[in-house]
Amino acid sequence: MPDRRQLTRRAALGLVAGGGLLATSETLGFSNVTADRGVSIETADDANALLGFTNYEDSSKIPTFTNNADSSMSVTLDSERSVKFDIGTDGTYVTPPTTFSLAVDESKETNIRFTGECNDAGSAAVSTDATLDDGTTTIGSISFTRDWQIPASGQVRFNGSAGTAGASGKYEFDLENTGCEDVTFVGIGIKETTTDADYVSGGGSLFDASGTELVSDHISIDSSNPDSDTRRDLDPNVTLSVNDTITWTFEKFQRSSNGKANVDMRSQDVKIRLYLSDGSMTTEKLCLDGCDF
Image 1 (spheres, one colour):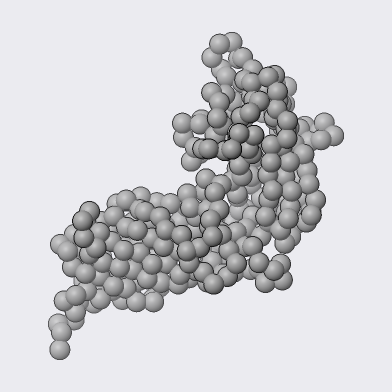
Image 2 (cartoon, helix red, strand yellow):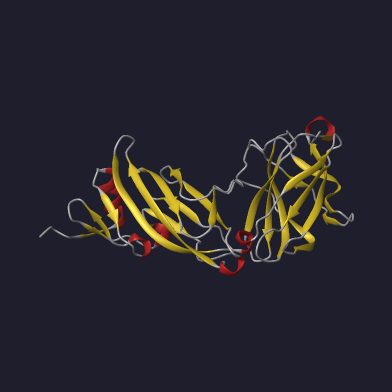
């Protein structure tokens, strides 16, 4: 009989660092981890497990993976449902199976979008398979399946497209709801552009097609840190019904240097984050020049 002992999570991490091969079973938080020496390792809940995984049951938050081990990981997501994943929430949705890497202590947010029949939305079983390596050798593996809640932002297939732009800094774009349910937008931010603009302003920042002001404050932009954005709440909120399209215009992209000069937005791309009334959010790309972010 192999010697089966209970180890702390710290000991488990030490085993990984020492080259012990780990394989986890299908339990919450990967609480049963079997090593090559027949050692049973007790870890904590999903947030503190070797591969931490949180927020998948709360549609108002973004599912997040965290590498709590002492070795890098390669993580593969797959599902039998009709879904796509946005790894790192950069607005690029890919069809599973899809693989991404996690360095030690690194976290990655991952949005899910449902692409199947509308009467079949709600949640999706997603399998996660991770391998741990020390740079040259695979030293462990983690496998589990969780039911991900699909938020409103994941049940709407937005068709975001840039319309017209000008040298004055204006930027018009459309949002089309080709998804499964009506959604209400409550906020917006700008994550990145292909220009040196660092804010949107000009006597109101965002307007709809009728000229109604939706955002009055300036919207800050830091394209050097595209993982972040400055949220501005919409007033009034805007509901986009299924199969409808809305047109919005950023009034003036500007740079604070050189006397608040307007930025020429012709042939430029913009990445925005939309905030929805259920607490979820989505990143969308507005492309006039290929969106090579």
